[in-house]
Image (cartoon, rainbow, N blue to C red; front, side, top):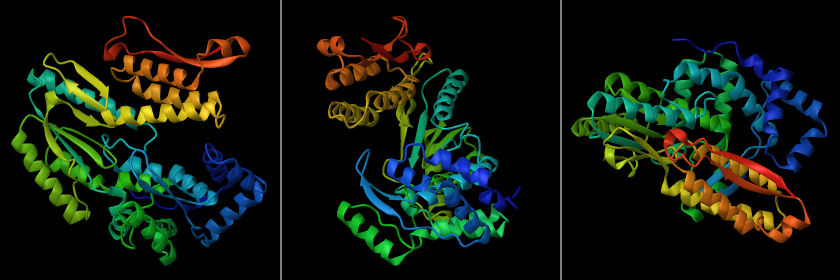
Length: 406
């Protein structure tokens, strides 16, 4: 087994920290960015010096609540800490993840993500149909209960030590993992969690949702389970996205046994539990995964539709974007990029009508199609264009553009 060694020095090389800074500044508040850039050279040099001398300590977190798609406590790091985490993930953790996880563990990694997850599920369903000539089969969908809140620090550290022999690097990773152990911070987070009914973070368990390293740790933490499912349970059709994973098999009883074995594994080895959403369903009834619901028809056709939850979230966002535009809180170019990003995701499935309705709703709610306004000034209108024949999942190549008109 290959291990990571003598990599720590990469973290305090100026060019690596500067590259991390350039990536971190995207999407951050102007205030944070301006403050850091006032003394950019000295700030990066200071970070490099602290890392080199091993005097770096994680600064205080900023706490806030997000309510969509569900209520969560976000623990946001200081700007300089985000730069260090970005550098750590880009220079070291990304390479570690790539060498230690199976191909079908698709989250976080640059060349994978939801795109590969979608591709693999479709490939699995297609192969299943070609082999069995039927859509009669079963899918076990598993989900971990409060995954990030329940990741055990001790177990995670033991995993990292097996993969990493660089003592300086392990020391830094321990500081990040233990950065939520401060008594005052725990007291404050627990008060917020009690108010909103959220699972508490303890000294022994829980990673901050908001840390970039948490996403990488989340991918790595269950990598042993991935291999157990593939190698011991002999499941050919398997894929995982963070704590959400799918097993496909023709035998329902075998999947029931798999569920029991998986439950035992996560409880005994990872101190986790499967949640109530874990279930076995008929293949013909479809399965929800990474924002889509996938169906295999009796003719072998694969249909992808956005999940109900995804549709609901999208409508809320569109209403929000329209209000922000009308109030002048954000400009049309910024909002258009967000909508285009969603459309690029949605058009992977059978969603032409949905995409058209979303665009129409935005343009109507934001007042961008007001004829008088068009005549008076130049405005941007989002439109979706597609060939009339584009009705199947293979022909959903719609182009979403920003058209500037007078």
